[in-house]
Amino acid sequence: MGFNRESLKGCKVDKNTAKQDKTEFALLEAMEEMEIIDGHEHTSPEEARTSSDVDIFTLFSHYTHRDLARAGMKEEVFLSLSDSGIPLEKRWEYFAPYWENIRHTSYSRAVLIALERFYGEEDLNEGNYHALSEKIKGFNKPGIYRKVFKEACRIKTCLCQCGRTDLDPDIFTPVMPLIAGVGEITPDELTGKSIFMKPLRNIEIAGNPGIKTLDDYISAVERYIAAVKREGAAGLKMKSLPYVQPERRAALDEFRNIKKGRETSVMAFDSYVLDRALDFAGKEGMAVCVHTGYWGDFRRLHPLNMIPLVQSHPGVRFDIYHLGYPWVRETLMLGKGFSNVWLNLCWTHIISRKCAAQALDEAVDLIPSNRIIGFGGDYDRPVEKVYGHLAMAKENIAFVLGKRIKESSMTEKQALRLIKKWLYDNAAELYNIA
Image (tube, rainbow, N blue to C red; front, side, top):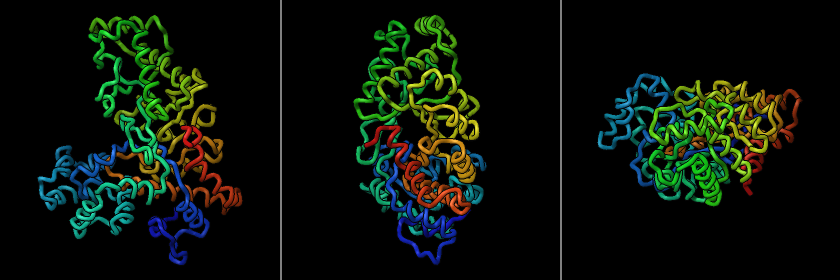
């Protein structure tokens, strides 16, 4: 798979120095000029970033946390990396052995690309970590989001799920959890603490005077959906958890048990409420995003859990996140089999760059071109890595479509039209972005 570091700097490049063949290079160069829609982020408002103390280890928060843990770093050591009270040199001593073990993962590659684009260094090592930390501190000022998202990435808008709707409308379009807490929407729910399909027994509901009946609960969910739509949310997010056919009688039994504080299963209740919430989301014309696959004990997040819901809600548009990794081929078949399913490669390129490229190649054969969303950074605080992830996504797209051009199964003009759909048009249509 071709890769030319110069093509990732967001500027014109000398074709004589390009390592890609000329077909891939031409596609990469064209993508540098394209405005895109970022299909998924978790980014908090800019003040949360600029008011925090940052250094080189800021870029190892979020997903690289998991690579460090799998390499053997204990949680208390990881937490110490962000403790500015510990000298930077000491934290580097903690970090360096693990860095050697994770530097070749896709998560880390996004870091290295970001370091070069924003801070002028191709590598991270003992000789430059201190200077890089100073550069990161200097970059961490109001306007950093515009420099990353707008100037470097050319992103029109990011579909952002951070639990709130009061985001900069010039950069973000909110996506909110499908089901929030019951009754009045609280400040906690607007800062990312909404229930997100947790079992009902974890919600403060048994003593809630506003929720007397199951229908009261459903009404609260509908009010919440209508409210976040008014506040600018373009979509609602859920997880592909196990689901049973909704039965009102069973849901009522579980609701009564919970109201009385009894231990009870909540499967029937959750499934019934989810079914009703999806009905209402469909009537409101809101897309429903679905986390599938990898996260914690991902066995419960199989993408095929969605088939009954996709079938029973043909009027709801489902955006299936992460290609269901590791169940990528099964997820591709969701896109092949159902007309109300879109497939979103958010996060996928940095889970495994190679797998994402192979999936894109197969998707061209399987799925109509208007059903793929080609990129979503899926980051929060380390926003520089959005650029790194986007560069990797562009490499994958250039590699996959460049090969088809060389095989004469696609022209360059056709490839560019396909890229525009994957990186802009499809998300704009699904989420009603003007």
